[in-house]
Image (cartoon, rainbow, N blue to C red; front, side, top):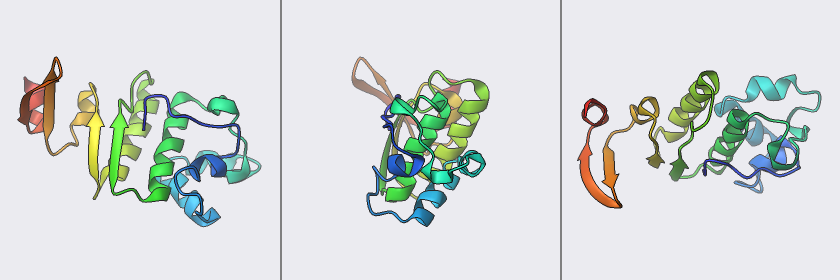
Length: 146
């Protein structure tokens, strides 16, 4: 998932199905729920068939990122790559995205690129790169203390 996930003018369902084209409506709903968007989607008059606007313009940046996380849930990806999932988010949105990321990463191989110590805290191992070279590999607590 890039920092600015690409969303299209379609619906929540269309955008989640980019990750799993044959996902049933139930699977799409479950993926949105797992990504922390269940309440938002249920509040929409058309539910998963609500249009998100070109580029997700009807959504906040945090909601757009959680739609991208829902794609990965729907796909049931074994490996997940996340680039700065909480960058440029307000604290409440960052917390919602972090919660969704932790659920997504459970039981999956994950490469998480972040400068956010709260996001990195859930990692099993922290790798620090300096000028493109490996500086060290440590448990997150040691990396945060350094």
